[in-house]
Every structure is written in structure tokens, then in C-alpha cells.
Image (tube, rainbow, N blue to C red; front, side, top):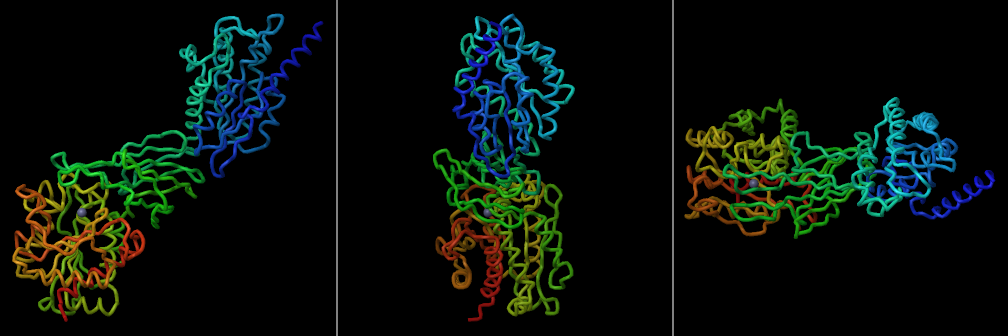
Length: 610
Ligand SMILES: [Zn+2]
């Protein structure tokens, strides 16, 4: 009789297993190369959370499970070699218990408590050989009531305590599924049944996925970092399956107005071969006291780099104007993947550039002051020292008053490289003019990944009518260098501050009502149109007296210099969006080449050799 009932029990058991064989959780999941591999081992509870865990870790890990119900530890010992299959696993999340503590005919546990502990010790020793990180999942609660097969709710803590000893000996962390499920049983578990509702399995899966993510950690988990020069993001939220919500860190001015969210620069680590989705959010702001949603749109295509040096535009992005949100989807080849609003240009780039020309006799470098944070403010002078300065005209080029506008720095680099080159035109230019350059006006903003304000919130291309050397030493130093030059009897034949916008490209002269500089402006404008990739979205024009009439502190550098000394001071804006003359989005190479053409046209415009 005893033998027969045992046979019947085996038959019933195998019948149960074969009924589950077509469970989709047993199907091997498609794998993505480069992602960490996770193995789930466990009984029907783990079968229930397998699919939702796989879904939660989509894009982060390849999640597989043993192709069956793990049963009791005795079954584990019999099959563990076959289940591990000699494959390489990064994380193994495992449990045995509910089947061991099952109460059999005669009132004994299917596997006695001390045998359970011994078996578990052997199983852990075997799992350890895989080199995988291990996570022990505590056995989930048995509810009160008449269960089939019978189980005693009080046995679970006892079996878990035995397991805890084994895990402690082996330094294996525990996914506390018992403690997690216990207070929620009414919502997630079936009545008088150890199993869970579909919603309940999803709830458990969130816990399981979180413990796996923790184990993946630095070796396998994807992280986003900004701890490098110019790096910046606002909030970084993990949305689960290889998805991140990244806020663009905005900045406001000294009066907490004019919020601008148009710089982001970050690195995605540990995502080789995995598809990552980043939603850029927190985009709306204010520009010149008006609500503005134009800083990041479908027109401002982000750039990416696999080496932090060579940048390409994303070929596809998805912009949702309603939210608004810019969605990026990518699969990095390597462990580091950089993303930025436009190709970054930091203080390090400038230092490297200048070190190339350290012994060039045509270049002089002056430190004209210090930024709020004590960084050097530079003024460069390029001219041929063998020709007397007395006969030379002077052109001034200013870049990077606004830290996000890196295109102005790449153009300034191109201008400097060309001006110091052996191009016959450059040789002639150096004999005919003095080129004065402010290569980078906001080194603090560039270092911290700022937007358009200095440390104290001052917009460095406003406030030229309200300069305060303590609050805005960057403006004070530049303005003093210019006014000292003029007041010392020297010439300023043309001054340009170079900027970037999203979609507008134009040249704007000083508020020259008398039209004294009209001929110069038009001559230069046509040189730009004829010989460079400048793609104006409006004709050349003179500006108003200030950017916000009647309000102090709202003159830009060109307006301020005209107000102070009637200088021919201009603003050029260049868009970061598609340039029809180039036929593509402007690249670093395009900016560098444009810079060369720009300084050449400035020289040609002031020489007026027609
Ligand atoms: Zn600007």
C-alpha cells in the first residue's frame, strides 16, 4: 500500500510538471550580446515572477530560468549540473523551501529541516563554482488555512532561518521576499494557497528585479555620470528596463528669472550592447522674460561620442512637444557613451589648443583678470611682430560669453588656428591687422556645465551697462581691456561677439541710428554670404539700444560698447540646427572651418580693398 501511494504521488507530481511545460516562463529568452546573464532558480513562485522580471530588466540583462519547477533541495541536487549547463552566469537568483517544508503523509516534511540545511549548503557550494554573483531569495509565506498539499505557516521562518545561516557563512545577500510579501498577502496571494495573483507576481517581480539590479552593480548595471568637466544633468531617474528619465539642469539669473535649460552633457556607463532609452525632460524655461520651450526641440539634435572626442548627431530622436520630452534610443558598442546638447568644448580644450602654440611668436597671451571662482580670463593677441603695430587695423573676436554655446568656441579655435597658419592670406592678415581674441569669457560656467549665467547669476552678454567687478568680474575684465585700448588711442575697426541659437542665424550691428557703420556691415555680410557657410535667417540689421528697453542691466556687449565709445560692435548668432548650405547639422569640423572664414572676412571687411 505504501509503495502504491508513493507511485501515485510521483505520477501526480509529474502530471503537474508536464502541465506546466508549455508555460512561457520555461521558454528560453532571446539574448542580446554584451548584456549580463541572469539565471532564476526556484519553484512555482519563481515561475510566476519570471516573465515580469524579464520584462523589468529588458535592456539591462538577459534573464533565463531553469526550464522546470525547481522542487525541493533534493531535486536541486539531482539536477543542478544540468540546469547550470556549464554556461557563464553573471547573477544567479535562487530559492528552495516551499517543497522541502511540504507536509507528507505521516506528518513529516518532504525534506527534514536539518537535511534541508545540509542540501542547501551543498547547492551553494556548487553554485559558487560558476563565479556568478548569488542572491538567495527567502522562501515566501504559507498562508493560514487548509492547504493542499498541507504546509504549516510557522515552518517558513524556521526554514528561512536555516537558509540564513548558510547564506551568512557564504556571504550571500538575501532578497527578503518573505518579509516583503508578509504584510501584503491579502492583496497579492491567492486564498489558502501559496501562489499569487498575476498582479501579485508582478509585485514580487519588482523586488526581485531590484535585487538583481543591485547585484549587477558596477559590473553590469548601467549608470549615468556627470562628474567631469562640463558634465551636467538635473534629476536622473531609473525607469527600470534600460530606461532613464534625465532632467536637463536649468539655471536662472540673479533675480531667479530667465530660466534656461539648454545644456546637458553626460556619460552612460556599462551599457555595451544594450539598448538604452533616455528621456530628456524638464525643458521649458524663460528667455528675455518670456516663456520659452525652444531650448531643446526636434530641431536641436543631440550629439553622442564613444570616445568623448569625436561627436556625431543622433540619426533619430523622438520629440514630444506636449510634455515636452526628447527621447533618445541607442545601443553603445563600448562601456562608455557620451551624450551632449552640442559638441562640448571645455577649458581643457582651450588649454590644449594654446599649448600647441606656446612658442609661436605671432601669439601673445594675457591674463586680464580672474573669474568669480578664480579662473584666468584670457585675451589673446595675434599679429606679426616684425611689422609695426602703428600701421595696423584691429579686429576683436569674443567667444563663449554663454557657456552652453560651444559652437562659438569651436569657431574661435578655427579662427585662431587659421590666423596663426602659414596660409599666405593669414600671413598677409598678420601684417595688416592685430587680431584680439577673448577665447572663453565664462570659464566657470564651462567648467560646471552652466547655461548662460556666471556663478552669481549674471548673464555675461547683458549687464554691459551695469558692470559690477565683484558680481561679474568676467564682464569687468573684458570691458576694461577694451576701453583701456580705445582710451589709449588705439583703434577698434571691428568687434564681434560670437553666439549660438537653436534655429536663428544672423548678424546684428550696434544701435547705430546714424548708419555710420552701415557700409561696413553690408560689406562684411556679403563677404560672409559669398565665402562662408553662414546661412542668415534674416538680413543684417542694427539692434535696439538695449535688449529690454528702459531696464538697467540689459545691454549686451555690442550695445554697451556702442553706448560707451561708439564702437562698431556686432553680435553674430549661429544656429545649432540644420544648415541648408552645409546640407547637414553643423559638426565640429564645420565650426572650425567657419571660424577660419569668419576671421578672414573680418579682416577683408575692414581693409575694404574693392
Ligand atoms: Zn549667447
